[in-house]
Image 1 (cartoon, rainbow, N blue to C red):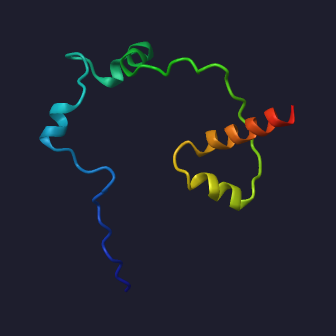
Image 2 (cartoon, helix red, strand yellow; image 1 turned 180 degrees about the vertical axis):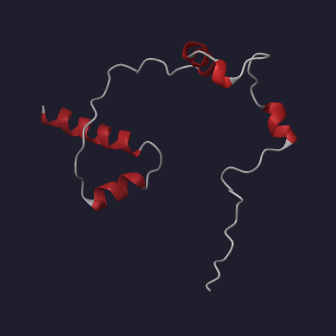
Length: 95
């Protein structure tokens, strides 16, 4: 009979809530349960993302060499925008 090691049930990325966590949490209006809410009510409470900044960008999928990706990722957050800026600069020079 094999024995399996007990796996920890503690999720470090999602710890158990404390009383302080519950006190800080956003509350639904009195007497309303989540399951009883209409989608429009829930949407108004959650909010939504604003309009995209102009000019909008076009999503594409391209293959880049690992060196290029590592170079831009090493610069930190916004690395995809930095690739876009570098390409725009090259297009401007070529025009």
